[in-house]
Image 1 (cartoon, one colour):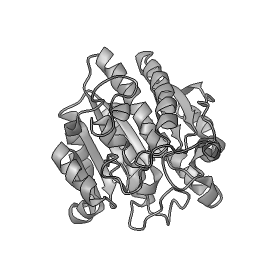
Image 2 (tube, rainbow, N blue to C red; image 1 turned 90 degrees about the horizontal axis):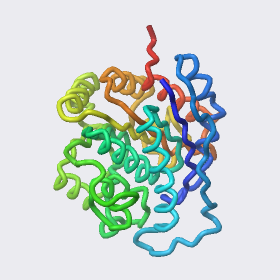
Image 3 (cartoon, rainbow, N blue to C red; image 1 turned 90 degrees about the vertical axis):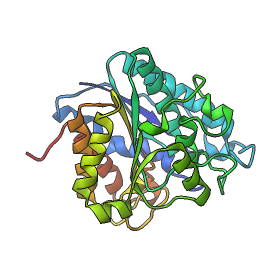
Image 4 (cartoon, rainbow, N blue to C red; image 1 turned 180 degrees about the horizontal axis):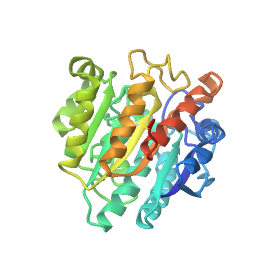
Length: 302
């Protein structure tokens, strides 16, 4: 398979900075070499999208900080992602904070519309990212990106790259949620997304959740975009993330989830976000990101 690696060092979406260095950390952890061992071809192994430094920019409106800068950067990412999917390549986007999902989902959505395919999104995250500027306690856009992709929130975000909804909420599935704002939770339920929280995993068992996730996508979509936030993993295993929270997935569960998604044959694109080398220990979170992408792209133990 031809893998189009896109580095997106965008760090405007949240309060804690350092995730702009995530793409280089993942690259240095050996991503290209790991993919080559799986007989993949890294079509564009170094293609960073130019993003200005957050420290030299003004946040603008308080309810949607750095809206202009994020919108501009994500439109560039959307174009690059759409081009890769249309060409039959697999876009693998390295973040950056999770606001980059605005661009990657918009690009994949545009490509799927051209191909007459129904798009689904697997959102692996401790957080819902389903706030709008009216419900967000912080005004940080990394907490609004999936809501906007589903058509909720500021027009500048919902109509980013192309007007209209990028993915139907009924085709969105979360895994690993454990920190959701009150108003955000209400909007998620109104929208009709499917969510498997850490409590669901504890009650049902992870293997049962994996089966439900697989059936969910196979029954309703033709293509799946995987959006993986490293903070879904317990900080015991992944300390170098934007918002570390205890009680997350363990290393084996995260790897198994990626294997299960690979086995569906539906995954057409992916992004991995919120690797923060400033908070990491000997680059272990970036190395874990490489292993996760390897499993999603066909690696197995035996």
